[in-house]
Length: 81
Image (cartoon, rainbow, N blue to C red; front, side, top):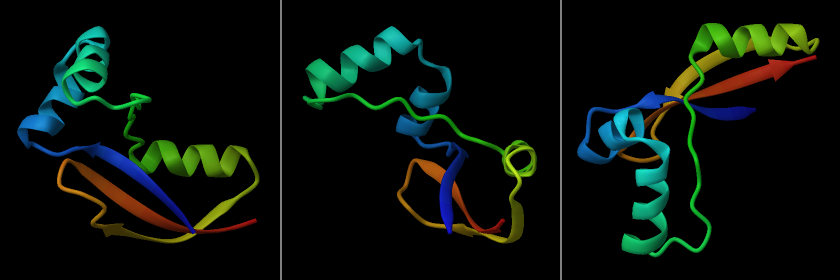
């Protein structure tokens, strides 16, 4: 099982992740939100994830969306090799 963010949602925070320059995000995470280790998030759409799995000898047996927070859409993949 693999859980992967697919894209930011259209919430204020999700839109920041989508459109704000990386230095601004890093500044906000470190100095405003006081994150000790700011994290960079990237969404991976289904087609790209399927290609990554295929190129590495794996097969997506099933996929379903799941809720892992209000600012990103996620997909859960059942993968076999």
